[in-house]
Amino acid sequence: MDNLIPVDQLCTHYHVERSFFKGLMEFDLIQVTTIEQTHYLHVDSLHEFERIIRLHQDLYINFEGIDSVLHLLKKIEALQTELSEIKNRLGLYEN
Image (cartoon, rainbow, N blue to C red; front, side):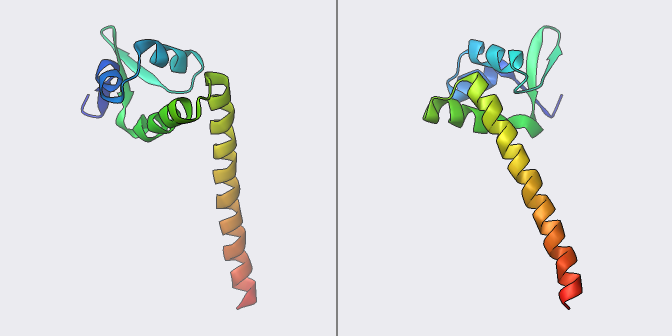
């Protein structure tokens, strides 16, 4: 339980409603762990959660839009990784 943060604590800290978390869970935008009827977010998911909050609060993007944006960001990251790998292989042939 050391790596788990209670959802209620996150709601207070980030000034979001529990209904916001419920929506995120319904759209599978975050994964929570439930222990004895208490929802927890894993520490490793905190960065993604903060990104979602910024998309929602700063840019007024709804859950469907957040899902699309996150999908596109993951695709971009995968393409950037692939490009780096290709550049590294190409560098072997240039030397």
